[in-house]
Image 1 (cartoon, rainbow, N blue to C red):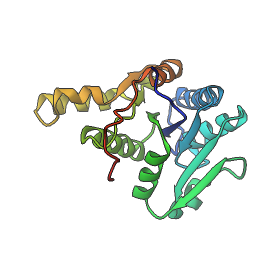
Image 2 (cartoon, helix red, strand yellow; image 1 turned 30 degrees about the vertical axis):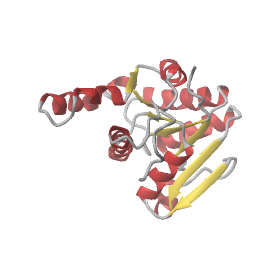
Image 3 (cartoon, rainbow, N blue to C red; image 1 turned 60 degrees about the vertical axis):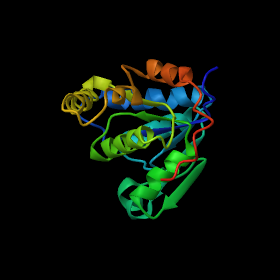
Length: 196
């Protein structure tokens, strides 16, 4: 039985990146989530790839729930209107926790240190048994390759178990990413509620 996805958190950059492929993927992902009836949960900004994915999801008739720390309201400028909900939270950790609570699965799209921080934290929580929600990294224009190499290096040096490779899946494009999420197994219903 496929995972009963209702909402998906997307971690992505507040910049566009040097390769236009990142923006193309962000728009395709926003549209794809909306067309599949999946609510987009994201960092609440209207700049960079965050703005692209939110705008595309809204244009396709999708639901969009933003979560943004109060100190980033000016820098990341939430979209002026149209979002289903925008929550303002007191900290970056509160943002990640709230996005986790709102989401049935996670996608790491291209981004910088903030995106990497979000991806690593959600994988750490999964490794610790705090959740069993699916996580997919989108490898647009080779963005995920350095991260994969780092994971392999940590496995090789004995700091991460080989099972660490199974904490997430890799998708080369948006259609494969959405298919992987849809095919993910149901989370373990016996797993205790996460204490983040």
